[in-house]
Length: 111
Length: 118
Image 1: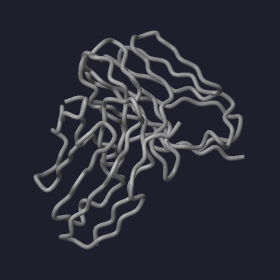
Image 2: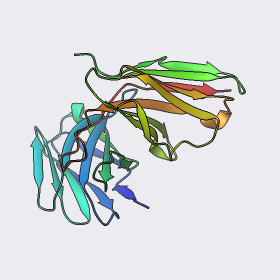
Image 3: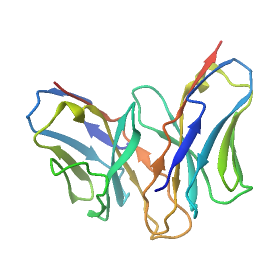
């Protein structure tokens, strides 16, 4: 059974303090690794898709990277508005859109 | 553009009652997903449709749960009878399926229905 594990469960950073969130997966034939952001009371909002080891994607202060066993979401000089829960998800299927989500990292940026 | 629209946003009902959650996907999207989110289990896929046809319902917990998609712009998730352990936030998402190619289109989520069964 596909499994996605995220760490840490929660992270508190000072504004401007860079860090990384981890997402490890056990699926043997990864087809896609997704990062989403979720604000309280809202649905997840799509950030990135990564397909192969070595791939990187960037958006503002966020950069996602992928290895053969895990993905990292790097946050550079975060601001309070970056506070949210960050979810990763994987799919191992072509022709099937089923995603397996991790339980997320709750990120708090302190002004 | 309008995103995925879910209704109601909140539902509080008593155990044993029928609950119907509704979803309007993004226009032009041909895949629709129902998820349940709890603190303990996170976000779990219940069922998904492609071109209004159910493709994978392996996440539907019991026969008390049923989902329909009568047309491309509407879907329902029904729980009958409801139980306290069904309390959760239920999300609907949609995407534009590209026929099994390498590129996976992102799923776009609604803001969910917070369901409380007393």
